[in-house]
Image (tube, rainbow, N blue to C red; front, side, top):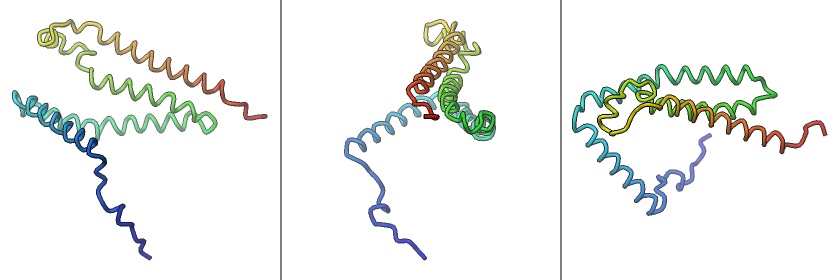
Length: 154
């Protein structure tokens, strides 16, 4: 038995004219940034993008999926609410680490100082501080939610 799909579901969703304008502007900005980025050493930049995609898809994704699965199984079914309060700060902290990894590890300190005119010192401390604030904020939100929730026994 074949289900008929309404015609409106087959049409592409284009959105409002403002949405289209913002989308076209973002594509133009990305194209400009790509042209500027690839202007110097285009081969190494393209190699970096391909390497980053392969590293993410073949190494990082299985690692954090396995860590999340172990966390969910380790916490148990009664305390599964805790998992969300660990996932969000861990994901944000991991994203910050991924973006700022060269500066956090100090591998490009001299290059950064030459280009930006600023010192690259302190990125590790700042990342650790932001990570602590993320987990602390998540713990506060969890505590407030636990306190507001009525007891299950009554």
